[in-house]
Length: 117
Image 1 (cartoon, rainbow, N blue to C red):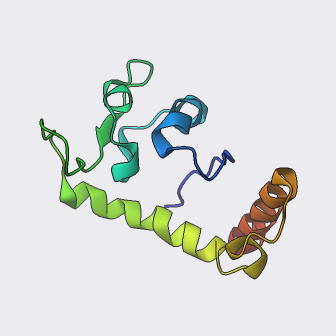
Image 2 (tube, one colour; image 1 turned 30 degrees about the vertical axis):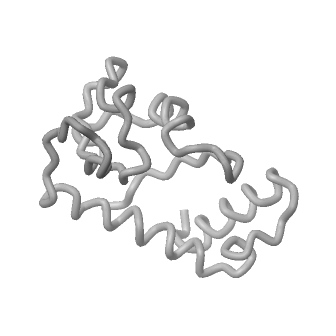
């Protein structure tokens, strides 16, 4: 099973969950939404616009701990492997490009070469 890759380039100081609404709107319908602790917000957990069940580990400072399945979370490993494969390209890993459009193009080329899309 290949993960569905949708890219959105944001600034380095932007939190993960602020760009999540745009990314979630681009995703095809799915049953389970995996994310790391950076995406743990009430807005993402509610997600009225999609029917996917979020499986996101709660942050340590969260008072109400939501239901979370470590067994299902293991499938997120495919996403981590995808990012590691893309970071094998030195240009992407060290962020040589100063222009955001050039950097995103390098990421797309690395993904194409890695997965022969």
